[in-house]
Image (cartoon, rainbow, N blue to C red; front, top):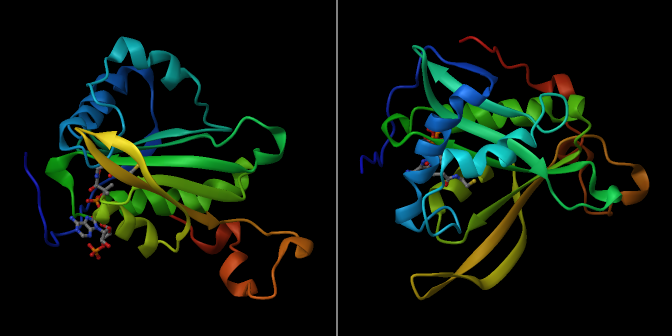
Amino acid sequence: MLEFGGHRPPLQKMIIRDAVEADLPIIIRIYNATVPTRMVTAELEPATVEARLPWFREHSPEQYPFWVAESDGRVIGWLDFKRFLPRSAYRGTAEISVYVDENFRRRGVGQRLLQHAIARAPSLGITALVGLVFGHNERSLKLFERLGFERWAFLPGVAQLDGVQRDLVMVGLHCGKRSSSSLSSNDSAGKIEREENEYKPELIE
Ligand SMILES: CC(C)(COP(=O)(O)OP(=O)(O)OC[C@H]1O[C@@H](n2cnc3c(N)ncnc32)[C@H](O)[C@@H]1OP(=O)(O)O)[C@@H](O)C(=O)NCCC(=O)NCCS
């Protein structure tokens, strides 16, 4: 497995676009590369395109988008939104996952996908984003924290990976205006009130 620990030059040409079904094989390939590492996903076996088709079709550009990052015509990463919990009151909260092809890591792709998600969330009716990350997936925790996510929950030893109990961390970010009644006295308005147009990513860079 190729892995790059240090910084690499940022990818110059990259677009973020809605994924289409024809992208699913490469999306699954990027995902499956992480399965044996036991660092990222709780799936223990590789996924198949066929089995993942219903999951892919649960997304929609208007509510729970599925985006791919593309460079020189090649899909090099993806980010998806999914329903957090089924009850209506959680409608404004979405779970996101982000994956970058291991040959294109440390070039700012994951960060740009995540920034784009934060920027677009308000127009999707999403006021909070959460990510579920293994406690030992440090690079991912760093990525989320760099974008302003905080650790909202810690679930000790909830995953069994090859006989090893692993912790799960829920990271979260409020990305819309919260009603004043939900603010605690410790909240700083500047921290939680992120306007939709605070960050305007260029889709084509
Ligand atoms: C986590 C992941 C998405 C990061 O993508 P990436 O494109 O390599 O990340 P970026 O180049 O945008 O890095 C942004 C920041 O993330 C953190 N980061 C990313 N990779 C890191 C690494 N190997 N070590 C330490 N920090 C890292 C750093 O804070 C980095 O900022 P810096 O480069 O200024 O230090 C990528 O490693 C990946 O696909 N991992 C497998 C899937 C996964 O874990 N997804 C998250 C759970 S859903």
